[in-house]
Length: 135
Ligand SMILES: [Zn+2]
Image (cartoon, rainbow, N blue to C red; front, side, top):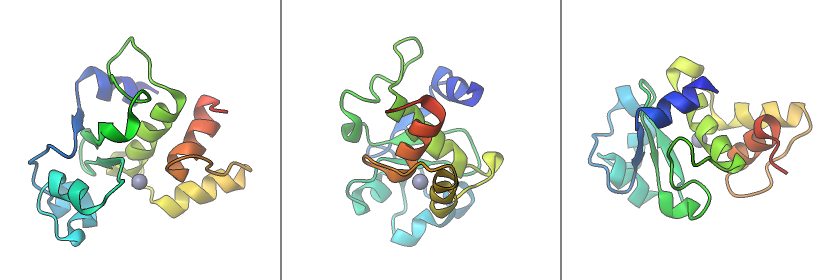
């Protein structure tokens, strides 16, 4: 999971609710269809959202309050939980450079190998189970 380490090492994981980054279609696809104009506004308009990825780059935005004790701190050496790794992989799979996969595709891939989401975000849970041996 070299891309996971690269994203963490470069500090490309940001706090989403605090972000003033413009929610352009080029960088975030149709996320601005919510009417949000910044990443922070997107998190405000979608209560419970855990993460948003930059479609055309490496940045990933998280609502760390959704992952208390699970994803934080997000630094190399402290270790991510398996679900945290699944969540980050979920966001990476949305990226153009990783295929730009959508949620139904992730769900179908899990079901094809008999894995169903069981906690929190289903796609993240499927990936945690399939790729990181999350029980
Ligand atoms: Zn997603």
